[in-house]
Length: 575
Image (cartoon, rainbow, N blue to C red; front, side):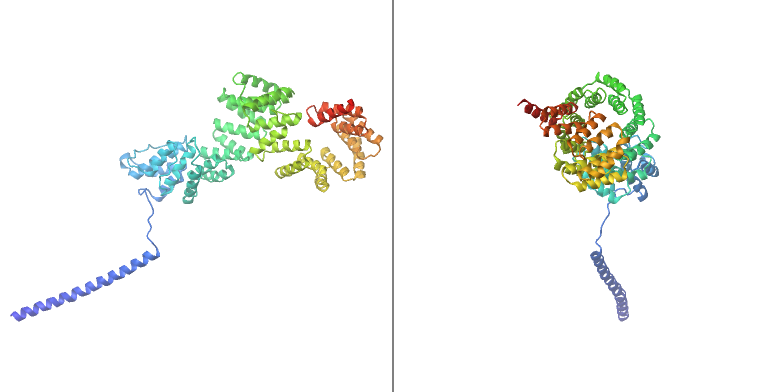
């Protein structure tokens, strides 16, 4: 019995060993294999985790919030809207952030939801609070799109400082790498670039934003303004007037339309826009002065003077008032003495103002005198220091160099201006005269000949062509052309033709006859008068020379070169 019991125990024990061993062996084998597989995965692709804060939102809803346009935000809010007690914490955060975006970036847009109370600290609402306090938040961690883009709302919150521009630019670039079509990111980048005076770059981003949100006022207005600042006046006006169709009473849009139409020299339309602004803001003194600017351009001087008198009762020392008063005195009253006094007062008050300096340099150039102790060239040089491509200042500087006989400097200045204004005939005429003075006859001929081939009916083109022919020694061709033109020429052109004849003929009598005929046609021809002075001066007939030089001085009373020659001649006569 005992042996039988022992055999039974042994059998059970063997059965247990057989059952357990394969199982343990299998576990060990499986464990070993798993360990091997895990090692291989780790080597080929290390584990990485994407940061996700808004776990309650679908990718579709989150992408609408991140798009950031007014319509996109409203659509996203509608998709997650529920009763206040049902919102999860991340949903409360996104709704609060969305409302703040609307209030800061899209002012005036319809907001259809209340911002739930957010109880937990987070980088999103933290960034918003920093923006409201005028601070660029650098502590968001930039873990996702919103934490990267939200600090840049400061761009449209209008802070008084700009020390965050470079940081904002880099963060917006990162944001756009994540969401290239985000309306909010493109709009903020466009606005930032505008503040950095990089208007052409700004247009690129604003166009992207406008394409996806064409009905958003802020984007459309920013785009129009950028066109204006980049000097694309046609595009600026077109976009501004399209905006005005949607917002016919909006003052900012009316002002934009007024400015763009003025720059396009459409003074009739501009006056209408200004009148509409003044209907809403009758006490807007700046726009009263704007109307004066328009009236000056339209040469309606009596109306302009009346409005300036009205304005002067409020302020007679403002920058615009002084500038416009000086222009009125110059163009209407023809009182350059009064105009000089006014513009000198303007310079004393606003010494670095480009437009004031520009008009002052024009007055100095016209009169040949000085304004505030500076010549036209010196005033123009001051403008060019700050604005190297200011065409008006460059032109005045060129004229001053020519007047003072600084031909080599004039040649460089004219070459630069021609690169900016290659189609300007007046500039090409100046370039021809400079080339002739420097004996660069081939250059002068190429320009004059091309102009003549294109427009042989223009008196000014013909004059330059004849000058070059004579300078090159082609006197027979020049004389033939002059003889053919004289019978039908007007008095001014006839005076020029006789003056040029004096360089073709050789005898003294023929020279004098040509010059006298020139003055018969136009007694105020300074070139002919001065040539007669030179003729008699060379003959040492100083009193006759003085007779003609005094007439030149009378026509150019502020020209220091003529005044100096007259003084020297008087001393010579007294000996």
